[in-house]
Amino acid sequence: MATASESPPAITASDAMADPSIPPFPLLDDDDEGTRHEQEEEEEDPLPHGGVLELPTVDLESPGEALPAACRRLGVFRLANHSVPGDLTAKLFARARNLLGRTPFSDKHAQPGYFWATPALAGLRVKDVSWVEGFHVPLARPIIADPPPSDELAALEDLAREYGAHMARVARKVFDALAGELGLDADKTAAYLAEHDGFLRVYRYPPCPEEGHLGMEAHTDSSVLSVIAQEDLVGGLQVLHDGAWRDVAPGAPGTLLVNLGDMARAISGDAWRSVRHRVGASRGAEARLSLCYFAFPRDDAVIACDGSRYRPFTHAEFREQVKADIKATGSKVGLERFLRH
Ligand SMILES: O=C(O)CCC(=O)C(=O)O
Ligand SMILES: [Fe+2]
Image (tube, rainbow, N blue to C red; front, side, top):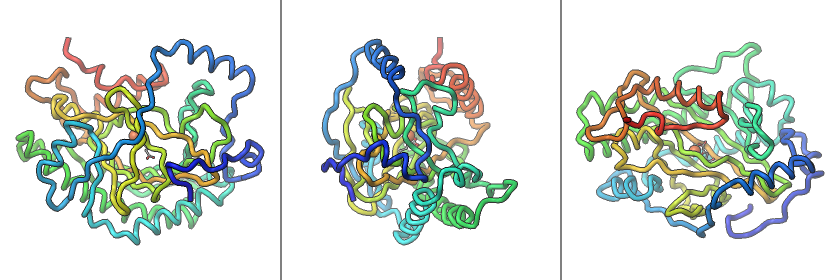
C-alpha cells in the first residue's frame, strides 16, 4: 500500500484507460494545456506547500480543553476513543473497494447515488476535474430508485447506514461538548445539529496518470462538522494553515478526522475555523478510499451569534445560496454572502 511519504510509480494513461472501473476523466489535450497555463498565470500568488502538519488528538470520552482549542486554532483534529467498531469500518471499506474498484464504470454509472468528477459534470473547464468518484448515501431515507440498486450497492448502503448511525452519535457528542463553550441553550444545541439527517459519501480517488489534477478541489465544507475515515496510510488530504498547504500527517490507526465547516464558523461568530482543504489526486497504483460524513443544522435553524459579522440566516437559505452560486459561477461563495453591510 502506498504511504504519504513514498512516491510509488505513477500509472500511465494507457493503464488508466485499460482499467474499466476508472471513469472516463478527461485528460488534458494540447488545447487544454494552453488554457491551463493561462489560468495559472492569472492566479495570484499560488500558495506554497508547507510540509506535514501533525493534528491534535481529542479523546471523545474526555475532550477537555483540547477540543475548543483545536476548533479555534485549526478547525480540524483527530478523534480517538470514539467507539466506532473497527470491523464495521473495515467491512465498509472492503465493500467500497470492491464495488468501486472492480465494477466497470458503465455499471456504476447506472446506479443511484453514484457520482464522478462532479465539477466536470457541471460543465466546468478541464482544469477543474476532481479525480474522484463515489456514492452519496443520505442517512435519513433509503435510496429509492427505479430500477432499484444492485445487491452490491444495497449491501453497501446497509453498512453505510449502520456506520452513519455511529457518525451521528459521534457528531452529537462532539457538538454537545462544544455547545457548552458557546453557552448555547438547549433549543439551539438541538437545532444547530440535525445529526440524523446528514449524509455519507463513500469516495474512491482512482489513480491519476497525469500531473495537474486534484482528487478534490480546495474548499470549505458547508457542514457544521464533517467526520472522515481514510484507509490507513494512503495520504492525500491537505489543509490550508498559516497561508500554506500542509499534508495532514497520518493519525494513529483507528482515529477519525473531524473538520469544522462553515456552519460551525457562523454559529461561533468566527471563533472556530472552517478549515480550507483539498485532496491530492492518487498518483500510485493504489486508489485512496475515504468515508466522509457531513452533519448540518436543521433547515429552519436560524444561525445567529451576538456580535457576528454575519446577518442571521436560516440553514435553508444558506444551502439555496450555495446552490445558486455554484450554478451561476461554478463555485461556492459561502459565508461571505451573509456578511452584514
Ligand atoms: O476524502 C477526503 O478525505 C475529503 C473529502 C472532502 O473534503 C469532502 O468531501 O468535502
Ligand atoms: Fe471537504
